[in-house]
Image (tube, rainbow, N blue to C red):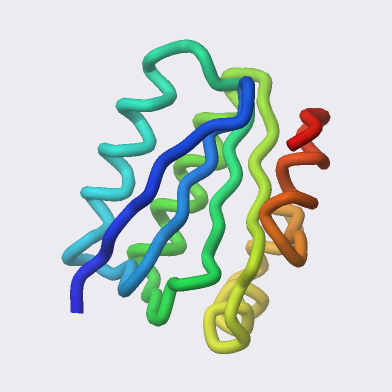
Length: 117
């Protein structure tokens, strides 16, 4: 299986929806897509919607952590939302939730960035 990304925005919040598998084969695509969007200079915050993410390995964790560092360097916030139980367990074991807040749905995550959706 592969990975598809859907990118949209709500004012200064970049919303990226991941569908499929985030692994060593697809991690670079995610990194490059998000970097390209952030380089436009119009987004302050990033929301990753993982509702349709079916699999993730350590490469995926690395991409998420790297985007977190980039967004915080730009003075923004990064939120995760709609995480499936299997992905949640991997993130929990990695300690990712100690630095990244999670939300039940996309609207809540966007609102937490200070933007009404």
